[in-house]
Amino acid sequence: MIINILDYLEKSNKKFPDKIVFAEGNKNITYSALVDNARRIGTCILDETNVARRQPIVVFVDRNIESLVSFMGIAYSGNFYVPIDIQMPKLRVKLILETLRPIAVVVLRSDIEYTKSVSPDLLTIVYEDALKYYIGNEKLTKIRKASIDIDPLYATFTSGSTGIPKGVITCHRSVIDMTEALVDTFGFSQDTVFGNQNPYYFDASIKDIYSTLKCGASMYVIPKSCFVLPGTLVEFIKKYQVNTILWSAAAIALVANTDAFDKDKPGCLKKVMFSGEVMHNKVLNYWRRALSETVFVNLYGPTEITSVCSYYKVDRPFEDDEILPIGIPFRNTEILLINQNNQPVQGDEIGEICVRGCCLALGYYNNPEKTKEAFCQNPFNTHYPETIYRTGDLARYNEEGQIMFLSRKDNQVKHMGQRVELGEIEIVVNSLGLIDASICFYDHNNQKIVLVYKGKNANNKYILNGIKDKLPKYMFPNIFIEMGDLPYNLNGKVDRTLLKDKYKNGEIQ
Image (cartoon, rainbow, N blue to C red; front, side, top):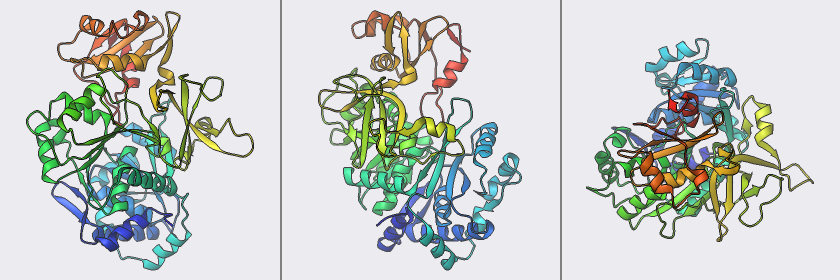
């Protein structure tokens, strides 16, 4: 029985000790070296913290091997890791640290000065020194025997509505549940070669990290430069024979928008999975035309349910302006659509996506009020405690019983006496050929629908002509704002909050 993700690592190490597990740039690490290094870091943490358990330890991350080794070392110590982007503004880092109150930080020697500038009193464990530490087998064994599957593994911080970041804390059991579901559903194996795109501070990265460890597979970190120079992306995928990717929808769109496959195609790529934002079929159809033998999968799930809870294997042609289903729940997960009256939806009625199962996070760290709001009692069960997570996302069932994501609850507005789903407008606009990306929000003061878009040679006349036969007139945007580039947040999504904050009187300031 697997109760700790380190069981994955150690079982794969016994089978493939000399196999590359993670590779980044000119560096790589084998399974045996990963176990050895992680156990040294784990021992060092135990000694330095007086054998603390289930406490937060920060890792200031980049997309490098050292971050991954640090994660495993912290897991060996019986504590949980908190990845924080080292490029993040210091004010946000300090807000996170105030909420978290970590007991230590694992940091590269080159980043010690930065660490001291944001938290001068925090116990600092220098990565390079920890690798020279002895391995305390007895201590590590004792910690491991005391661990259970609901011990926390990691916490990731998302934006909070009050401006204070929320730390979603996730346990071993949830990650194991997710990993088993992914591997069983999509047939990952020791022959799988993952191409990592998601940053480690973003929970989406756990899908390829832990699937790699479970299967004895290999994961290659794709450099950011490959997404700046799309031709090099194809070269990279072909060079390392990457056959599986689990990327953000934004990264998938970037490839399509730059026509990256026009000159060459990565034929080795057999499984393409995406999540994070709505995948527009205009983008997906570009990929499907280029890679006709590849399996494409739409994944859905917020951070609070361990990254994924539903999937849809794309099994038919879609028009550019059609909506892609988010599909059906993974095994051992139930998705409930609950209407405004706290009842199950009927027919094609719209409801909030609510989730129950082992996938649920433990809650928000040091934030019982927000935890109670989002992780609440299942309204359909009055007999015993049973927690569901209310996602704040709206959806309905299609005729095949698949879930169709519509928008966020806060993206549903009353306009001209009609209920308008702003996400529906975005889907139609994003299907237009000259549009690279767009988002809508509502100007409540002036009762206007605002469309912010990126699209070379597109304008409001072009957009209105493109949507006039697809949307009722009351859903037409009233204000059009073209931007050379749309801002993205740390989770790889268009930063709606930033755009709203910068909006004033029909302009983005």
